[in-house]
Length: 320
Image (cartoon, rainbow, N blue to C red; front, side):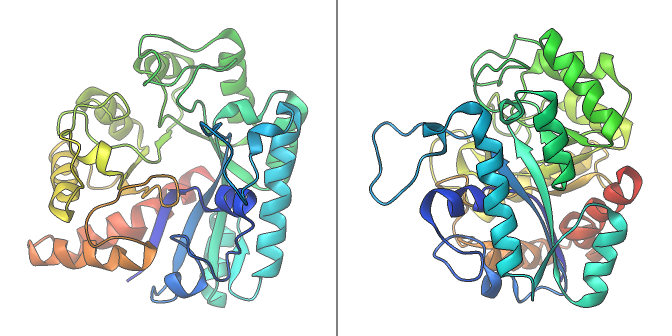
């Protein structure tokens, strides 16, 4: 079984806690990924959140000036990738993904979660030069570019946000609408016909949460030939506040497949970025249990392979 996951916050945790990608108590490290035929991962550079109070033995990205946060995370990424170069390699496009596969190495892609990490054009260029190939336009809150759905679902892109959209498209960076308000989503659709991703978002019909996609939004992603990654956070899988089960993940997958998502549905687990995942899926190693559950429920093997790897790889081949 191959695995291509569109979103994790493990590098952010490495920055704040000093953990290593080689071996840690987080959701992703060398041993936890070793059981997959090929493993590819978008590692997010997260814009950061201020904890209610200081946490012992933990740095806080938000304590840095805004203009220094991107470079701090890029330094962490470079250090982690260098120290783990014997099993993991930074990739910037589909050719490098295939090269990593042939060499038997995991493929690491970089993304930015929250465009507030890119306060100037110089930051955008530094991120691109360092390998960032996907940018989430907003996180949960209001930024100079856009607004998160959980803050104001009716807030749209700002003029600076529209300019950033075109700057990123000009560089060949994939746009990510996870977290983005509904109004921002549709304003983005006016700005460009380019395919885009929702790297870690579920179905709002199945679980009524503003972070999830409406059927109309998902259908637009399908129409464009975009990509949507199923998120494993319990709060986005079920609305009653209980810990999710693997069957809850299947309900979202089923719904998206019924909307024509066979070729554009992927995984965006949100490992190390959420505090409750489905029972039995604690780390990336456990994703095999989702595949096993799908096969028990008589999903086609081709559907499972598409969800777990092939759709994401094909999308990158078109976009990068």
